[in-house]
Length: 216
Image 1: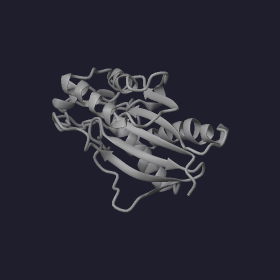
Image 2: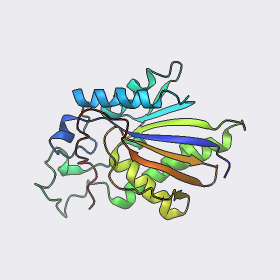
Image 3: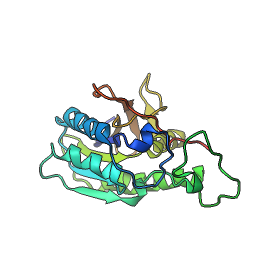
């Protein structure tokens, strides 16, 4: 497979809500001290990669993580995208995970299919269409994407189910830790999931509990 682009998907660093197992959804929470350190560590890990484009969710925890990474990437601007937001969880947002239950009447919650549709629409526009518009070159283009655990996992599972993405042997889509790196190599039509939720670059601090990855 000829690689046209490499997409590096990063989950934001830790927040106090992660530590307290609070469901964030689209609440605009901030990185805590550990999260800032995690962002700096993932920035160091990605320093050898020269990014052509950088995108992030417009929520602060993702945008700040992206900004820290781009301190190592002079000249690369950041574009914030609302489609990269975490799943909207309605009345569960701000509640402790496991101590509350979704009411069947809460029609505000973004359904799983709607969330997957949003993730796939973002992928088609920002990756598939973008790739088709690029002039060919010897080295693959590199895209930085900073988002949320639920979004990254949902996107990966949706791409795999659609047949557009094949995981490498041993790569499993499961828990997506804070400040972890997932990597897709994309040919323009199909892709290969090279790694998922890799947090080996984090040498200090807890990864935090991914309270966003609630399945309903």
